[in-house]
Image 1: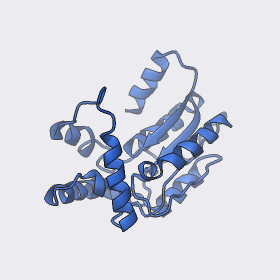
Image 2 (image 1 turned 135 degrees about the vertical axis):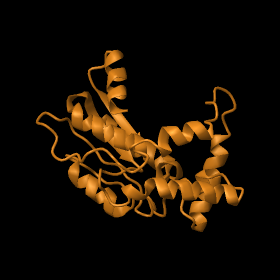
Image 3 (image 1 turned 180 degrees about the vertical axis):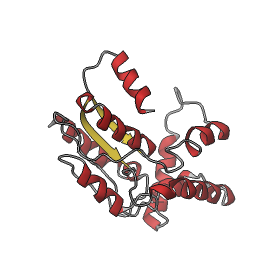
Length: 201
């Protein structure tokens, strides 16, 4: 996936890019930053973790459990996948789901279960075999940033975020209170403001 993304970026004729990787996309972005550091000007990682990080091996199992939990309770699985089960988390999830319905035109087509399972659930990354550790990027690597939500994410908690932050040169860690895997959806206003400020520095 990282090679495909790099091929696409280079086909566009771009000298370098700013990358934002969420969840599995964050794992892909880490590989790009490692294999093609001069291509990445700035990096924002959310809802993700490093190879071997705490919770990485449990991501697929927890995702499947949350999906089943949503189906059995007749709720949108996103409520379980992205938000905590506290009163604030449930409220944030409902607000997020309502926002998703605001745009009525130009929406993406729904993903079938077959595609979802083959694209994420059975891929090496989706199976928890995350990319190799970042280690120390080659000289000349551009400034990176680690942006992360609160450690209540049951899949990739605070220890994993701190571990990843230590591996990213000039990394900064941003935590959101009572936020789950979808902390950037719950705190979208703060996230956008923080990300824009970082990208404009």
